Image (cartoon, rainbow, N blue to C red; front, side, top):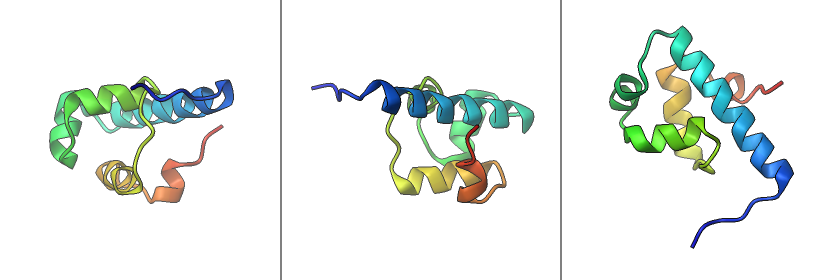
Length: 78
């Protein structure tokens, strides 16, 4: 069963995913290399970057650490 999110929730997830993608690329990682670096599956990271995943807090921490950011820095969305 797929989760159904409000338009506002979808937009927030997509904004977060776009931020992760920009930061990952700026850090010089391919999606696959980054996923390996932080211990997450590449397809999971693809879902994050497309705004299809509602991340668990521990995965947010893994992504932030992989990008050498604090969790709060990662979550600063425009």
